[in-house]
Image 1 (cartoon, rainbow, N blue to C red):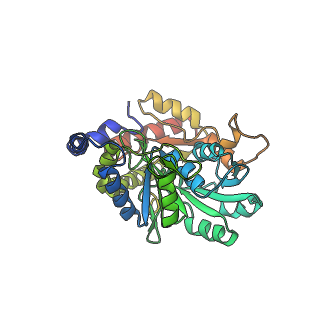
Image 2 (image 1 turned 90 degrees about the vertical axis):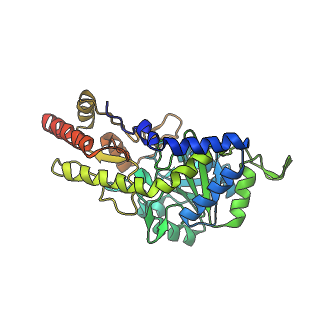
Length: 365
């Protein structure tokens, strides 16, 4: 079976580097908030072009802690999209706030900024802007909109490590930016991990306190809403080893998407937009009417696919009823994710293309 993301191949290529990083931690005997964590936070901040980063336990914690740092709380509303896997919604709900959903643009499948004014209310405190599938949303437009209304901007960069527009990385635009280092991400750990980035020193200090019980000093809780969410030294060391490879991996991901675009161009499917610097091709997502039939045909041909994501947040069983997001709902019925990871060979891409073309011909997709 050709996997959608072969982590064995991905990490195997770095076996010696990863083992050296892990051995360094084992020999030092310091496992939580030590020198590896501090070095990674500094190196990742330099890479992003921000004042600092605070490493935490996972990407969802990063979103929740970003909201808590901005003092968003019970009854407040947070604007976001409903097509990004429920992660932002989970963080918003965890602090007692209310997610207020905005529909997407059909081509990019990113938040449609034109709809923000209709969604905002006097209780709106923040906008979570998700850079979905590796492509940057309109961060400049979102920032201008938020600043004009006194609303905080949080970038959800879980799928956009390294994306850049107008000389600025994803994660350097908002008041805060949340990252995930889940193993499948463009920059992935060997377990869970996350980080929050910011250019605001005061916000960064609040974050450091909130990730560790709200401590102002050891065993001195001085800030409400704290928790235990810390990136361990082993994961920090692994991420330090991987960070120098990120731009090269992203370039290969773009090349893979371009090859798919060329090979599938005449099928009538909606293909990913041409990937530039603002797109790190975390996922290769196509749209087609006969999605389920084509997916079954690809599985029969030994090719794994996925749906990112099958149930929009506003249609989940825990969501309040009555919300209508036509573009989001249409997308969920037609999206299909094809294999895309840096070690995927041209021959394997061509195998996927051939199987897609055969399936499309059979099912008149």
